[in-house]
Length: 358
Image (cartoon, rainbow, N blue to C red; front, side, top):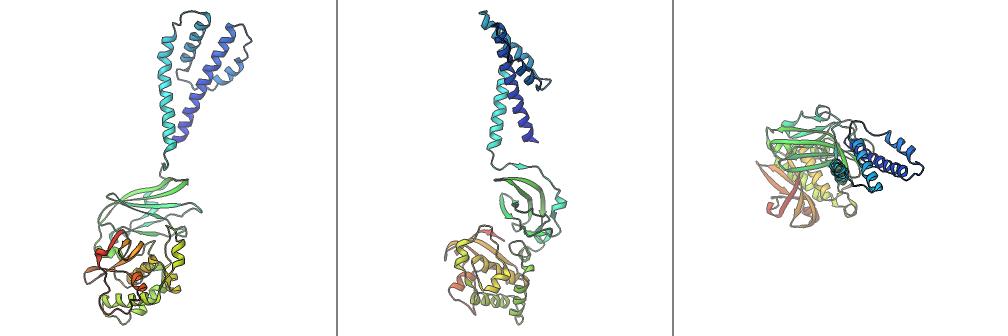
C-alpha cells in the first residue's frame, strides 16, 4: 500500500507539471495569434487532475505571469506565483527524495501475513525450544530469526518441512526472545510472516541441549539412535556412554575432503548418512556425536567457531557429565587416530572459541 501511494503522488506531480506546461503553450499561442493546437492536449491532461488541491490557482498565476511577460508589462503576479508555487516545489522535492530513499533501502520488510498462534508452537518453551508451523513455498527462501539481548541466530527454514513443526533452540539463557519468520519477496527484500516475543524460563538449564532441533534433529535419525543404544548397552554411567560413542566415531568416521570443498553455508549434515558412509566434515562429526549422546539422555552442545588445532572454521562438542561441561573434538581426534580412550577425552577449553552454540 505504501509503494502504491507513493506512485500515486508521483503521477500527480507529473500530471500537474504537464498541465501547467500545456496551459502556458495555449496562452502563448493565443497572444501571438497562432492556432491553438495544444488545447485538446490540455483538456485531455487536465481531466485527470486530482480534485481538492491548489493546482488551478498555481496554473492561473503561471498564466498571468507569462501574459505579462509577453505584453511587456510589469510581472506583478510573480510574487503571488512564487508564494504558491515554491511550497509546492518544496513538497515535490521532498516527495521525490523520499521515493529515492525508499527505493534505495535494500531489505524492506513488508507487513505481517499470519498470526503468532498460527505459526509459533510455544508448547516447549520450558525446555528451551520454539516450534515453527509454516509451509515453505516452492523455490521461496524462508528465514527464521531468533533474537535475545542483541544476539541473533538466523536459520533457513527447511523446504522439506511441509506442514510439520520444525523446532529451533532457545539456547541463549532465560529471558525474553523475539521470534520472526521472513519470506523472500525479491532480491534481498523479505516480508514478515510473523513476529512475536516469548518469555523463556527453562526448568533445568542443560536440558536445552537434549532437544531435537532443525540442525540437530536426532529424533529422525533412527539408525544413529539404534547404534547408540547398541554401543552403550553395557555402560553403567554417562561417562562410560560418552567414551563408548566417542571411540566408535573416531575409529570409524573419516574426514570428507571432497565435501569440504563444495559445502554451502546453509548445509546441515544428515546424521544417518554420516553414520552409514563413515565420512563427514567437522560439522558432520559433531552432529553425529551430539545426536547419539542426546538420544541417550546426555546433554550435548554443538559449537562452531575457531580452534587452536584447526585453521578453518570448526565444529566440536561440549558434553555435560559429572555436573560439568567438557570439550570434546571427535574430528581432531579421528585425524590423530586417537581412539579407544581409557582416560580423559576432554580438550582444553582455552583452545576453543565458540561463535555459535546449538
